[in-house]
Length: 484
Image (tube, rainbow, N blue to C red; front, top):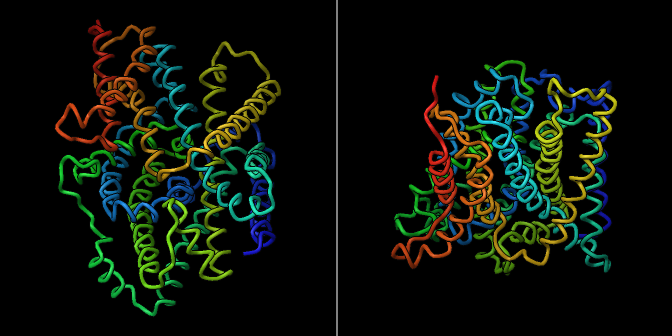
């Protein structure tokens, strides 16, 4: 496909986002940026969160992941249903009761300032790393198919991508994102369905016949029964539940969208709708992955060494039209995961570290707006730096890398929230940062030597749960019974 066509699609899509940004950011205030004035329709939030939850990693990595793990990733998705129920019934009522802007304000109310800032710090680290990896995929495709051919270095498309996100989120913030996420979900899902149908028609095979052949080829194996394997089905289900609780329910980015709903009941409807949608949509991505592998088997099309590049290579090979459709879906997926993250990081830093919204805060709205914009720009530069640093190390499936990172960074958050919600004990607040740092270090050691120490056992996504348990135990050791 012509690099000019690819760039035209990219900037055309961005122009559409700018139009939405202009409409939604009229008369925007700081409150609009952070909470959308709590007037978002729940069904719009729910649909948009499908795209934000999936991101470019799901769009490209999950289909490619089928090559090595078949459909065993579906166990994680089944666990999502449990996790979303916990969020809807336990966490959302808490957040609405406290009327929080940053969800980590709960930790400050429950334990103290060190716990508050520790929770927010681990969210910031988690989101900077995870979202950088999600953004990387879109930049990687632009670089491989456009800029590399022109001899332009990787950092140029990375900088362009970051600047564009900064432009359309700069004023409207979360209000803009609620609506752009909806648009991006439409494009991403439409691209997936259209490409799958096109390939099946091109191969002259029905979906039913294809699924039968894919099963015979071993692509659709859904449950791994070897308990030592890192994708053992029970581990996948349990891990999926906790991944959802942490990466959605304890994540400022995802919860900030939920908290823009008018009422708690609307936010809960949003969450239950999202859970069913994610189950269906992710299964479609797995089916797409099997279709891509089957296409390679039938046509002899050589698959790339990087599984993340399978979808793009096949799409661009089939026809220019399919290449354009794929590109629109990828760009939509990339923007949907990046824009909300940038806004949530700005919100968390302003409220958790710069003390916005507290009674002692005497700054004017204009002063806070200037600070907010500066923080927004600084986080954009951090994203750019990480995109450049990560580029030489892209060897494994990004979906696996992201969950590996989350296992270390979200574990302390899980331990802190569980301890706060299910015990009444008081802790030595100043010790919390030490516990929160030691827990991931211990998990890293366990993960590295598990095969030797535990008869060949390999940790998978359940390492997140172990991390949370270690944090919980550490908090218990520095706690005492509450007098009241």
